Image 1 (cartoon, one colour):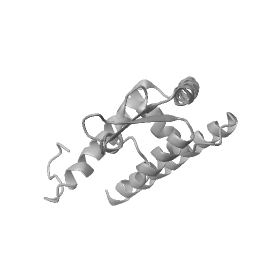
Image 2 (cartoon, one colour):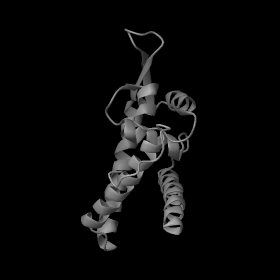
Image 3 (cartoon, one colour):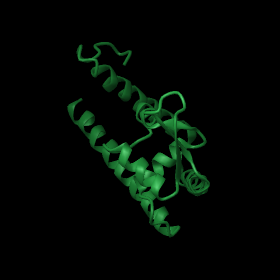
Image 4 (cartoon, one colour):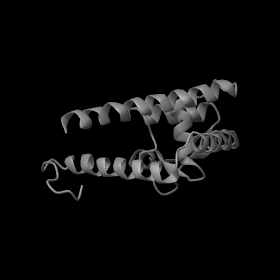
Length: 157
């Protein structure tokens, strides 16, 4: 069990890096140089929502350690609009600008191309669904370990 578990950890990390490279390649192909791959994925995940930086963090829509920096850069480059909350002046809400919505549409088109290519490569919905179920189960296992009471001891992870 030790080797498959460790291989899973390495594979998850490697897949994440590969996907970020795919995003970078797409941005390069589109001639977009004022936003990086991590920021573009944050942008994609925000979608049509409006949220605070704290909500970005809580929903897991950020990647990397400095979500505030990435949000600041996306605002500076015109991908996000921001507005102080009328109820809590310390809180800033962000949403995609027209430029951000345009890029999100381009990333969506990339995902659609990937879906077609995956099907041609022989991937099935069932295979991806099973992989996602396994990854969610591993996520629940790791999340349960964060309560500092120890790892779950049942198969209900």
